[in-house]
Length: 251
Image (tube, rainbow, N blue to C red; front, side):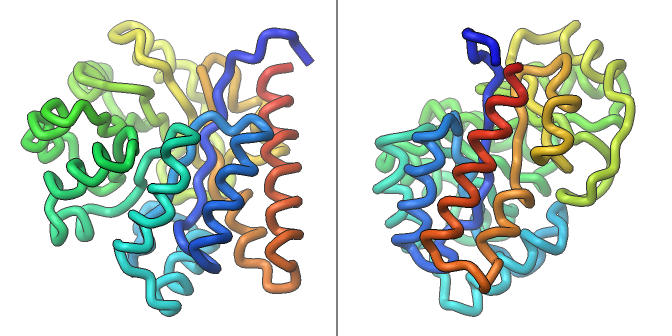
C-alpha cells in the first residue's frame, strides 16, 4: 500500500435502517476505517437510480416508519464528526422545500446533497439557494453525455463530480470504457472526479484508475439488509470491507 493515501472513498448507507442508533454507530465506525464522506440515503418509495439491494433497504426503512425527523436526528450526531451528504430523490426535497432542507443542512453541518433525478436544467434554478447556504449539489456525468453537455454540467460543480460508470442502476456491475469521459471532464474543471455504480472490493482498484475517488453503496447495503447478521456483525463486515476498498484504491 502506498504511503500517501489520496484517493477518496464515499460510502452510501440507507438512513435509519434498521434503526437510528445503528446508522450513527455504523457511520462513525466507517469514518474510523477511512471513509472520507458519508452519503446518507433518504428512504424513498421509488429510488429509480438504485438497484434491488438499495431499493429493498429503502422500502423496509419506510415500512418501519421512517420520517425526515429521523434523518435530521442521525445527521445531528454524524455530521459534526465526518463529511456528510444527503442523497435523495427530488420528491422529498420538493415536499419539504429545498430551502428548508438547506437550512437544516446548515444547522446540522451537512455539506450538501446528491439528487439523481434532478436534471441539470432544474438544478440551475435552485443553485442560488445552494450558494446562499454554501452547500454543494453534486453534479452527475454519464458515458452518454456529449463533450458540450459535460462542459455545461460541470461548470458550477462543487466538492466532487459523480461519474456514473454506466447507463443503468447502481449495483448491477456493468462496465464501460470511461477514459474518454474522464478526459473530457478534466478539460473543463479541477473539481475532483469520483466514480460510482458497480464499485465493490473486486472492481474498485480498476475503476479508481484515472479518477480521484470511488463511491460505494450496494456493496455496503447488502450487509445492512442481511437478517442473518446481528447489528454488530453488520458493522464489522461493512467496516472491514470499507477498509479493504480504501487500501485497494490507493495501492
